Image 1 (cartoon, rainbow, N blue to C red):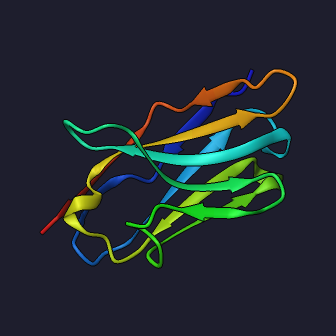
Image 2 (image 1 turned 135 degrees about the vertical axis):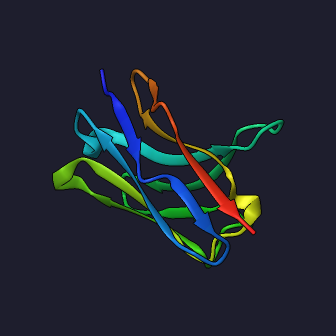
Image 3 (image 1 turned 180 degrees about the vertical axis):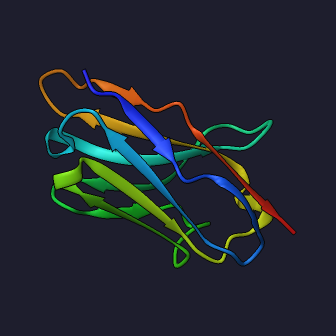
Amino acid sequence: QVQLVESGGGLVQAGGSLRLSCAASGSIFSMNTMTWYRQAPGKQRELVARITSDGSLGYADSVKGRFTISRDIAKNTVYLQMNSLKPEDTAVYYCNAAEGPPHFRSYWGQGTQVTVSS
């Protein structure tokens, strides 16, 4: 069982930056993929950025060039550095950890609110 705790959200003006953290109670090294999602009011949850066990990165088109996902395996923590924030980035940001075979379990954090004012 892995527990995830997100932190680092808050209120920021457009153009500003925030760094989100996702601290895992267990080893993230064993996770197949660590992913940041977000959900804005009235919208579906969407993928923001992911990092796989081999270090491959992926981003939503809307955040490419502005957001960077990284990890510190020793600290069992995944980060999301968000720069040049826009009002449309306002959402609750969630961290997800996905196991590979044989169990394919998925774990979620409680989310952290990011609000970008114009």
